[in-house]
Length: 222
Image (cartoon, rainbow, N blue to C red; front, side):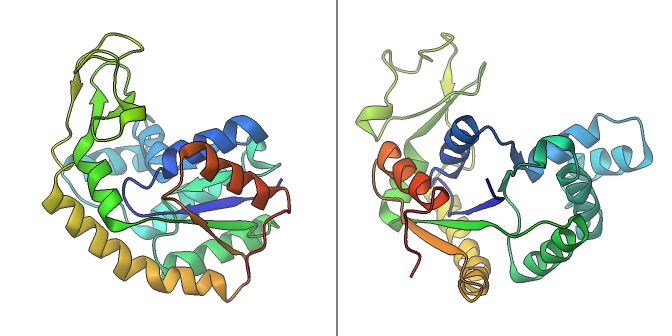
């Protein structure tokens, strides 16, 4: 198994697909958010910096993020591949990631882009509901993702809520930022001939089936 990068707009199902791939191929699903949350628990200078920065609403410096990422990718569970979620977000970060891989003696692997219609994304965003107890996600605009009992989690019985940023205006802003930053990034990986574009408008099962075809060498990226 090789390393995998998932690139997708908000609400495209990147987290769901990452988890499915992680379970099937037994490789870690690594998000930059998870890395930062773990570091925040450390009684160290860098842990204190990350905690203070995030608590104040700031952004962690790129150089520190690169260092933390490289440290995480050096761990034993990444030796047979991993899924990278939330990084890189632009071409500059992609180039830094190339440098990290070179130092680790690893290859880029696969870059999988989930292509999905903007209107469908907006529908998913505005309909998303999250369990306040276990974090399970539902969608009131998607019949197959409805909870059995309205506003109640099927798994733990917790209350479902709508996140503050799960509204149309917020989505449109986030989507435009994604297009501006990610367009050049996709071109960067396309030129390296490792970009695989998957139709994200399909069902979760069909999208995963196509991703599995990529990873097992049965999907043409031309």
